[in-house]
Length: 142
Image 1 (cartoon, rainbow, N blue to C red):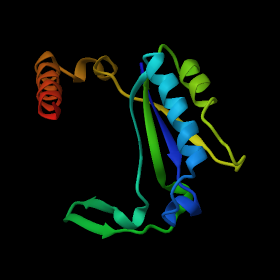
Image 2: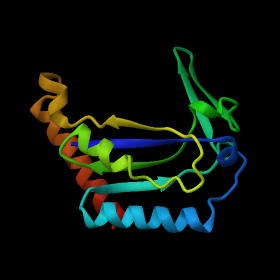
Image 3: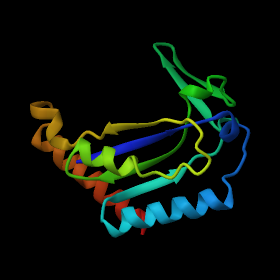
């Protein structure tokens, strides 16, 4: 099972304040534990929303809204994707995330859909096409 852990933005991350040397070291050590355990699929920090955009969809087309965005509490500052055996295991890993300054924060954990979760709607043809796309994408990243 794959789970995405979403690190919520703070006023500091939205202001472009970079992590301290201590936090970078502690996060590096935590990420090393994830790698050593074989559960880390991906993990990255995200730049503040002033460097981002939102694309809104409607019946009449799309609209692009440039950042920054005002609702900091709804923004994401980073993420991990973990491959683990259960939701509980994902929670246990995320409970170990460093918090060197003791500030209140929140990390949301969400399960990633797997092909079998779509049932009969994902026909064998669609499943094969999806597998081919994943394979091609992986080859392009090499």
